Image 1 (cartoon, rainbow, N blue to C red):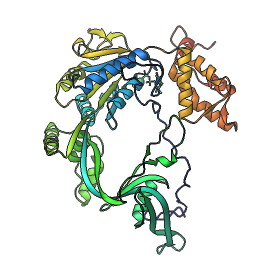
Image 2: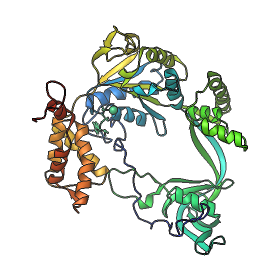
Image 3: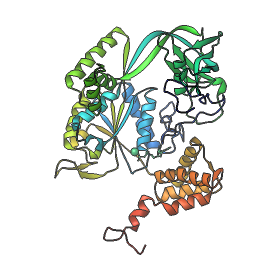
Image 4: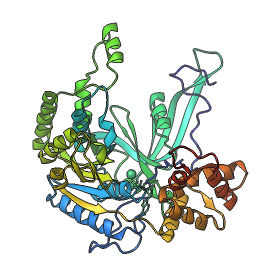
Length: 468
Ligand SMILES: Nc1ncnc2c1ncn2[C@@H]1O[C@H](COP(=O)(O)OP(=O)(O)O)[C@@H](O)[C@H]1O
Ligand SMILES: [Mg+2]
């Protein structure tokens, strides 16, 4: 019964059968695992999901080394190149190279223009979100590979029809042994929410009942080269144990939590929190206070600061005020690594009428930047990226499709070729075909224009020319 109250678990919400593939999240850069450099720092061919772009990858590798040896403070990396040449992908790869769980905070230059929040405030907030804090705590947990998940149902006392889960029995396995636990239905809901299935390695905090999925047990590892799943070994030791848990938060999280404390049950505070729901500014005083507390934690050895990466795309959209403010942010001792990207050559700096500068960045900030240029791709390289994306998205390509898309990519851009992939797969699906055929791509090409073709079709007067 679907219309049951929120506290009951729908009867049909049985967990999917073991072995069923978890639906993987498809993000445009999920195939990028790093810069793919060898031990000497050279980009030897295609690696870590990165195709070509050797010079830029090697340059970024040097920057990663500088950051790791703490010689990059007060500076920034600027990626310059045409759209769809992998600037965002490079920035993401740099953050992967800096280590797992390094916060990556992307933003677009134009995000600073808000009617509610000051431009500088938006920048400050992004910088705060890019400073991670790893907090270590020792907690009592039950950990292991899930071997059994059996909800027990009883008649729902509130309605005559539905059933509710009275308790759930789970089995957890470690290298040392197995244990069966009888759990509260609330934990079962948490298990469903985390989409945990048999074969996953999980832990449950003993005193809060919080359920966390660590990954899939490596006994279930598949032979794909690229996958979004993380495989973890069977946990050692007992199922019930004390475990050091690591929690990752950012300074931005702490600021926000302190700026809007959850308080009061009376109607006024409830209403107040509804109205205040939007973005509110965080004062500098609060920031300093948070920093002071964090410093205390770091001194006690409970927490560790993890500087992350701020990525500002379309940096030429910032204005002179923002650029000046950025100079200050870069100098501050707790600054994350900053990466800019732009596809502009010389243009006027926004907010001024006469200062023309390379990439639309004032020369004092440009002076702080290491500039890396990205090159456009050859047909061959476009083909490889398309193939990579197709396999990550689980799409089959029929004969000739790859060549066709590579050709489109060379003529238009890599992004256009990648963008054709999904709609073409929908067409193929509608036609009842398992793989994308040439006709699907052809049809897409008739329906959509790439940027260059569209620009060409626009008439002399700047409007659409009816005859074409
Ligand atoms: N050298 C490369 N190897 C693999 N994939 C790439 C490469 N360059 C770009 N891509 C992919 O192509 C798409 C467009 O690249 P993106 O980084 O967004 O371009 P830009 O930011 O320069 O406009 C993304 O899905 C990206 O992951
Ligand atoms: Mg981009």
